Image 1 (tube, rainbow, N blue to C red):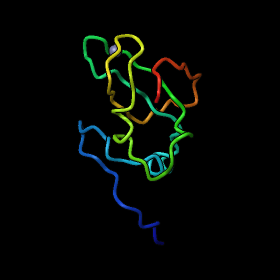
Image 2 (image 1 turned 45 degrees about the vertical axis):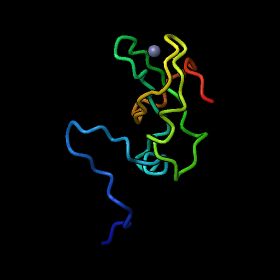
Image 3 (image 1 turned 180 degrees about the vertical axis):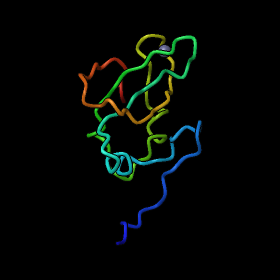
Image 4 (image 1 turned 90 degrees about the vertical axis):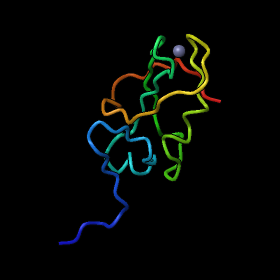
Length: 95
Ligand SMILES: [Zn+2]
């Protein structure tokens, strides 16, 4: 028995898994991302479908492209949304 040899995506406990790509994420069965405002005082977050991004794009690659609609801050934390199949609320603009 041989498993498909794709590069490792395991991250140490407590480490943010931002180096994974959308392809890696979809291999895990996750089809959405959570976008967190990078300003901890705001801490606004939304869920988005990841379908618009190509497999080779890393989650961290798109972080600088978000603007929080609530506080106007540029940049965000992007993480896999393991509850991706819940309703999506578009609240942060993507440029
Ligand atoms: Zn914000």
